[in-house]
Length: 374
Image 1 (spheres, rainbow, N blue to C red):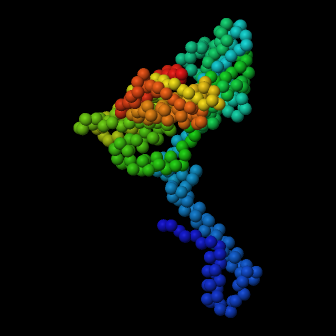
Image 2 (spheres, rainbow, N blue to C red):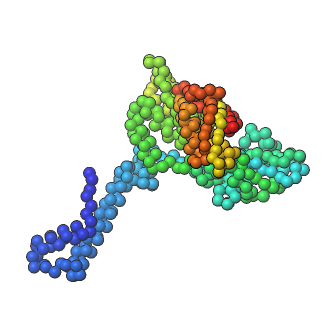
Image 3 (tube, rainbow, N blue to C red):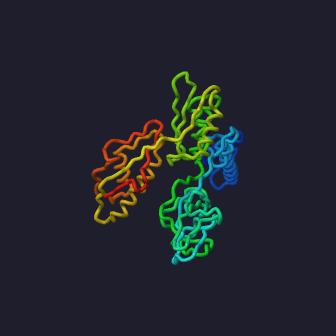
């Protein structure tokens, strides 16, 4: 039901009419009279009550709730907002003199140049510089630096910093003089928005007590943000469904696949076998000739376009094709006004779109090295 709220003047007019209906002798109700002032005061209280009613209505309906009210509404149904994620990347610690040894320990902090975004060194036992005996990243005698992984202290997109912006060493590291991040950080997400949570709630409700693809999709969506997936049913009567899931990397880890398997297993029908797998990767190279406007720097524009194309391709969901026309459009959009023309665009040496198949994802082979701009 849509309630109609009255403005103050309409309320005052209604009060005057009601009062005069029972007391015809009340004639002094013009502006400035005592009676008119009383009517205005009552009307102000009515406006306040109308506002309280509007607030209650907005908080009791998911479609109009905001923030904590959305959380409490969906929480009654066992659903929760997906949290923000932390940006990760690699920084390079360097020193002016390569003599002697140095050790970078997990927990060491670095910050952006303005000091606003802190990052902490994390453990990676697969890193070539990792020393299990020393419990840190060793910089050997004669070596000028070491690249180590870090994670943002603050969750959310604020940790997605640009390249060469992490330049402060917040905790002293003997033998280390400078730090920088050669590549930009990406992938961190803010907490799920109200709109996204409302939309996911609809799928969640629609999938309750059902073993449909919608129910499986709703279960997968609760695992974490940024997932894309494809659900393929097997041969009729086989009792098998295959779920292909990707987190944007093209190679989701065992922990993520295990979480998705558990989520899908909670809603699948008895007797149905659910196979959860990562996607097959269609490695792709991109090459084209770039002509820039007279006022533009070609190396800078080329770097901007390459970064934009990498981000665009990484966000393609499972089963989505990489169209040659979209590559051209993304290249122009990455540097508005700076691109004069783009010629000879090739994907894997040809002009055909890259079609990964229903369980595949497209990725740029070798990262930025797979984009050749001449």
